[in-house]
Amino acid sequence: MSNEHGDPGHGDSPAAWTAVVVMLIGIAAGTVFFFLHMATMVWVCVGVVVVGLLLGWILAKAGFGVNGPRFTPKSHD
Image 1 (tube, helix red, strand yellow):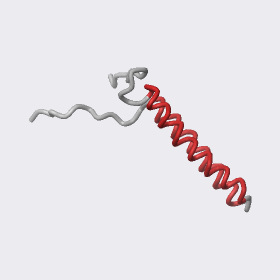
Image 2: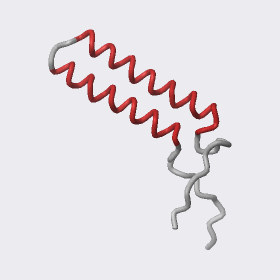
Image 3: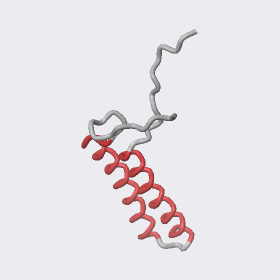
Image 4: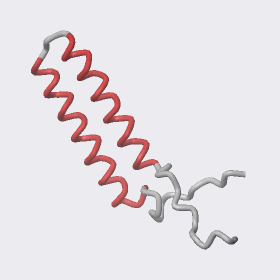
C-alpha cells in the first residue's frame, strides 16, 4: 500500500518556534506572578502571550512559516 499523502510537517519553522518560546515565557512568568499575588504582572504576562501569538503570525506572513519562501526545512536523514 502506498502513501499518497505527503508529509504535512510538524510546524518546525522559525515562526512557530519563536511564537511558542515567547508564549511559554509569558505563561511561566504569569504562573509565578499569580502565585505571588501580583495581578498587574499576571496581566502583563497575558499581553506577552498575545504578543507571542501575533509575532508567530507576522513571521509566518513574512515567509518564515512552514511553507514560506524564507524557510527551507531540513531533512530527517
